[in-house]
Image 1: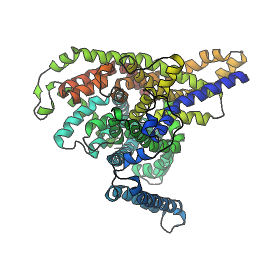
Image 2: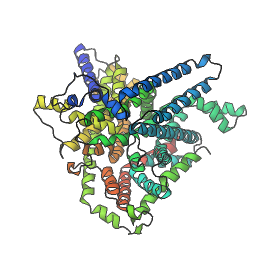
Image 3: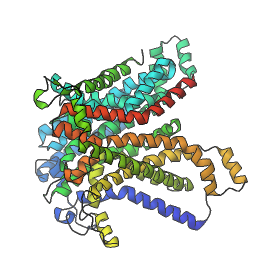
Image 4: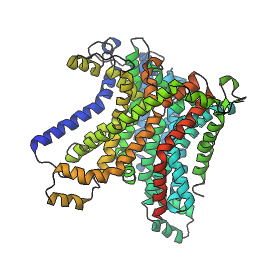
Length: 334
Length: 279
């Protein structure tokens, strides 16, 4: 559309967008401030934007020990992660293949993360983080592997049955999760899977599957058939040509879909709330901060909010391009 | 072969629970007789339909749709159009808009509540500028729930519509420009008709979301019933887990599904036609 040249109009447009930006980020900025306040600053009648910061809230949230006692362990942890990052970055110069170096670094990182509660006295919040990470990664992996197969099949084999599957999937996409989760709760209670990661992962995979196959299918449709036909002429089977030719060029689409699945799995509250008893994930853990009269409560809730949000913001900033592309492509397909 | 695992998952984990929901809805089940449900026929349905709280929650859900859906579309379009006018700092504006969109809803609501709670900046500024003292009561809490949903969903509408604006038919715009059509005329005659399918898309997503609103109600009410702000989904949850009436809750979710399908069927038929025509 025509852009205006009027300097006053342009100035107003920038002001409006700046205000919109402020409206979007001010609440989280305020929470970051609250999370490093002392209770007396956070509970003031007049909002305080200048105050003396403290790390007490974070150590109370994450640790059952004095911060001074944790300091040497904290330094050791930073050192370990620093070394792992350096190894990963210099993967090209090491004698081992890159993928093995990356796998080794991830593996070592996981070992350290899992061993940490054995060495230092971490609070429950750390367990919620581990649960969240396990459930999120499990959901993304399972969801993408079966979703990519289905999306590819639906994009390539045009048949009345595939249309039925797509339409039914769309209907499922609109179901309120309550309709699914109550039977799950019931079955989980009877089968003994209640309060396990497996039940939660399966349930999240199922509820996200319709969305995943629709999105992946639309990305597969953009890839011309000739590409895998060429591979098949060279003697590769359909599955082999899918894995060795299609998947490598599909990475952007897979990352985009994975990102949305990650958001859905990490942010889910209702399913995790109903299907777990003590193995809470972060959103369930943080919901306990919804009320309370203790003056230290506000700052602790703020520290928890920042702790839950920062990982997801880091991931999104890193992959922002893919997220916006996904939203835009979903738009065009409408 | 390729579709197999996904269809299996959906059959086993969505169709089966849905059928189970229908069957369970015909039984009297509480936490005490989980393994021995009692057949009661349509008694649960009668009870749900005769429950004033069910109708209250439906009313709030419909109010939510009536306010939040148009607000999301109008605000989203407004900021998409503003974004279309600028090139500098566009990345910054979009990145900031993603913050409320990706934030965990439970956390987002907590943060939002703190802004409006006693001592929060919004609370303070409202008091200073308009001499209005905000209290959490049965009028303001439902409004906050709706406002929060607009806050989180406007960026989504904005990005979708902005992407739509980039695909406007250039010939029509050019023709309009040659004819000397003003920006408003271009918007009304070219952009809005072109974006119509996106409005439907955002509207449908928002309606589906409205039936699922749960997290923000959970946080803002702190499970305090006096705020009169239960949505369908939240009341359903309460019936199931607070009151322990699993059979009644299942009957209620079956009714909700039927309600959504009434809205959805025309859209499904449309999709079916689209997909079969493409071949």
